Length: 344
Image (tube, rainbow, N blue to C red):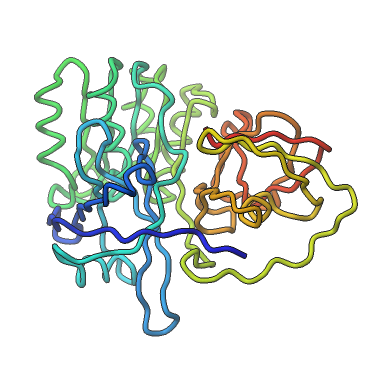
């Protein structure tokens, strides 16, 4: 099985954000610029060296905006047992390099002209601040951010958010929740905050208990699931930077066909029934994006244009994503005789 192509990114600056978080800015070689075009809310998968197993892969959201920032930037918050976060914060300095896969992910608004209700907790602000900056720069809608932290010293991007609110007083509302003052955020309390903005599409990123409380709050307000987008990161079991094990021989009975559009190029392939779509594309020299290969990160997400597929595993897509035709190529096998997918 062919490996995903990775890239070397040079670190231009390490920015301390809080006592346990920092941002890394990267320079992208001009020849690789197209590969690193991204949408607000997406993430990078970065290779972390390990003396035990060679390397591990970790996903970090982009806190930069393609509409306001010249360089890519990810923000990393240390965790007690976070091998990747501690390595990046301790070992990387300006002038160093990291190995990364191109941006991926589906945690991104369709339009910045519609209003947005954003919830973040802790380092969950990372993709959310990218959305905030992009919406203010490239859209016309109202933006409401509810941001929860332990205390005022834990607030990542505090100064940047305050400056944005001052520059856009008619469009941006930032509401801080501090556990040291208000206690843990509860669903009823979050519902009270969200009630005036319940008509807006919601995006949520943070620890699981926080996201569950927000989801409960929005449900109590009658917000349909289809208007709530959650960002989930699972620990990656496989390593996309290491050579993948060969796939077992595919069964040929019941073979389908698939037409795939990627980078403006359309290809039609025979699709054996037991072969996952991503494996089929890579084996035919089609550079489809991917990361975890486990259905846990959404890097391989594409849109089902026609036909039907079955996903063997899905830990990241919401029901509304699936209803919108989004599928995970690394977990999809054909159900109908003819399938059409697009990465456009």
